[in-house]
Length: 71
Length: 475
Image (cartoon, rainbow over all chains, first blue to last red; front, top):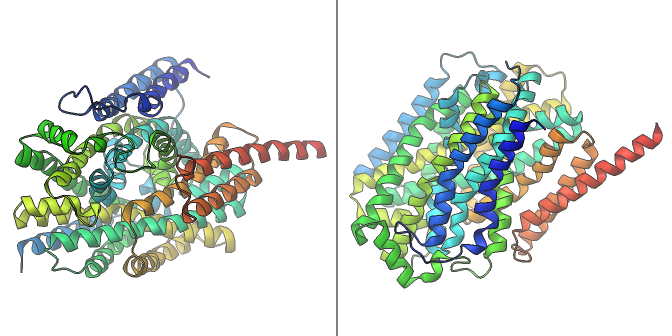
């Protein structure tokens, strides 16, 4: 597997850890942050961060993977 | 005549006119009708995909679940972000195959990868079987929204008939281009509505979103935690549902095929990067549902909470705008559902199964005719067998997700073969049907569709391994 793809997969696994597997541990009301109960705040934060993680993944793939022929 | 009625009618007609115009100057062949000539850039791809996924379910289902169930509704905010993350890796590969071999539909992929026409027909029939309830959901949602927004002066079935005649018209003339153009209008209307109402109602009744949540936590503390007001939707349900829906998102035949419309694999990748941002407005939809719970508790159905609260808070003309946004929001996904249901039947059932010599022109002609047949069928279902909104979607989701092993293993594992995929599909879909219809969903605390998906994966892997051994033994 090319290095870029490996890095991208690693980055892409972060939202899955945060938004699936850690959910039972953040199922709480306190502390309330920015007016949101903690569970909802956690979810909104990670949904917001996901595109930035994917952007880094995209850049790394471009940097490390050999360019492919297209069109 | 109330102003809401005029506003709804004007917008719906305007949207359809845009859709018809979209295809008026293009020579329509199969490639143009189904995948827009594979020319869509980043902006159009975004408009199209956001158009397909922000459905009436977003409007009514997400706020309705916030109202009646509480925290389990949060999965709707999460699963899109996960699905786009999956699509970042999956869709560019599928797009490349599509470009190289001229694929237009999801069954085309199965036929190409597994070299089996029988599997193609089978996959196409399953796809259509799950599209029709999803289409019906859009119809029912549309009828409900227009009925409420017009202050109950328009009957739901009348609204459905008119809107779907217009939708058929622009699908017939413009294919996927029509959907993309109407989606541009729809996204603006939908976002405006969600932002105005989502910030507006908590401010009006509580002075802001924060104070609204304080009131919610005080009065309904269980509503902001799993399992909410339910007893069955706890963490295992949530996690299994998220994994299921993240895998199933692009397994919907129309979503899968939309990827082919992009002009390059690069476009698809960049689209996957930006899409999760457009999940965030769903938070505002939850806010509306929660505010409704505090302000107008005891509604007979949570699905009505969004509209009931708007009705109570805003003047009639704004209600008309919301109704129009809701109607157009139903028409966009409906158009692409009808488009691909008819293409699947014409290209992958009729041509692949019965008439391999049929020309492309004949396939397009038949597809266009089937647009009307399928719409009438869905209308009949919507009017005579209405059902609760979210459950319907979940059954469809469980079903189409069963394509996932065949798609993914096919991309990454050479040994996967048609017999294995077919057996996996049969096992997965049978399990879904037995569990969901038999009332065993959730099972062992988990989403039944997820259990079916696991069984499907296991069977596909096992049969692939055994059948490779058998054929290797023959050599």
